[in-house]
Structures are given as structure tokens and as C-alpha cells.
Image (tube, rainbow, N blue to C red):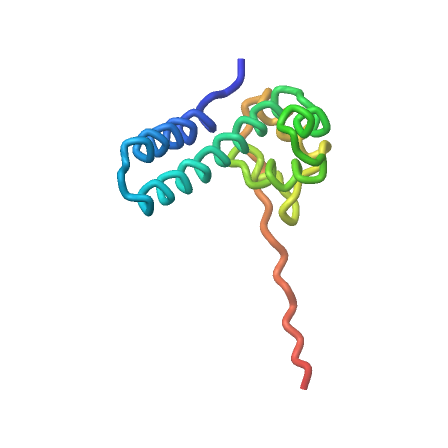
Amino acid sequence: NMDETGWRDSAEQAQQAIDRALGATEPDTVVAELSGAGKALDDALREAMAASALAGTSMRKLAEIAGMAPNSVPPRLARSKSLGAYADEGSITSQLIAVARYDAASGRPPMTFKPRRKESHDES
């Protein structure tokens, strides 16, 4: 039972943009709508992949299912709404996904990290 809330809205937005593109007569409108559909579909895919990872699918299996390189999965998952709070420097590890699964199963809110402040050094 995959949590649909993350991907369903984006998938519906993609479908609506495709429908508008199909009804458009101006080429520029078709391009704009299809571009929007692509972005919404990418959002839907990212959220569906995150939900699948939270349900127990390995990142390697996600890459296989999605037809992408394994090293492209962690950054995608890190940009998802459900796993973004667990990301570290724009990526996520299987260990951090395990923490997210534990938090989700126990009803805890996602972890939050405060980024370290970068020290500013004057070169003068």
C-alpha cells in the first residue's frame, strides 16, 4: 500500500498539462505544456520512488525498475518531499532511508538537520 499523496498530485498535473497540449493549436503552447508535464511527471516519479524506498525497495532495485543508473537514485530520493529531510549534502544513503523507515513506522516526524555554518576566512 504505497502512500499516494506524494506522487498523485504531480501525476494529475502532468496529465492535465498533456491534455492542454493535445488541445493546443499553437506550437509554443504545446512546447510549454509538454515541458510542464515533463517537470510534473519527474516530480511524480521522484515521490513514487521515495514511497517505494520507504516501503522497502532497495535503491539498486529502484534504479532497475526506473531504468536509470544506480548512482542517479540517491540524489533523486534526496530531492523528494518524504526523504528530503534525511538527505545529506544532496544525497541519501540506505542507512538514512532505514532511519526514515523507522521514523515513519513509529509515527515520528522526520529528522531535521541544521546545516553547519561555513567559516568565512579573510584571505587578506
